Amino acid sequence: MRLNKNEILASFLQELRRGSVVLCVLAKLKKSTYGYSLIETLSNTKIPIEANTLYPLLRRLESQEILKGTWNTETAKPRKYYELTAFGKEVLQSLKAQWQETTNTINDLLKENKNETK
Image 1 (cartoon, one colour):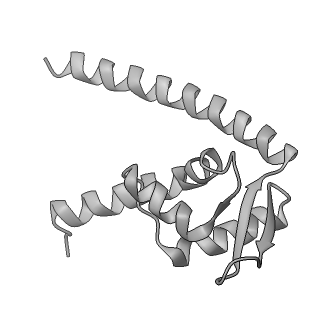
Image 2 (cartoon, rainbow, N blue to C red; image 1 turned 180 degrees about the horizontal axis):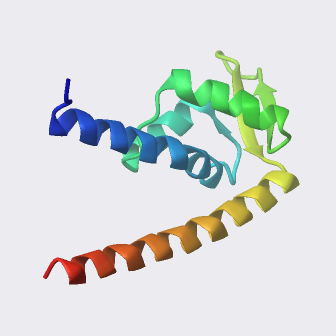
């Protein structure tokens, strides 16, 4: 059974987002931020992320020592704030460089493809 065009496109877009969500999260954690605020910030920049995706990712990044989590219990609702560690900043810089290289290469391929279809 063949999927329709919209289902296929949605699947490909989900794969693209999944591959870039770590970079987006790290880019927004240059300053201490709590999870729900991060969800809102990313959604406002058209990078939607669900809580059931974000929180396991934050825990994994914390266990990899890319992020440092700190609880703030001084407010009515305790919140765990996350920020990049020194190692996390190095990882972010490496990912950014790789992202730029990859997007440049893909853009070149797309330009070639555009020229071939004329």
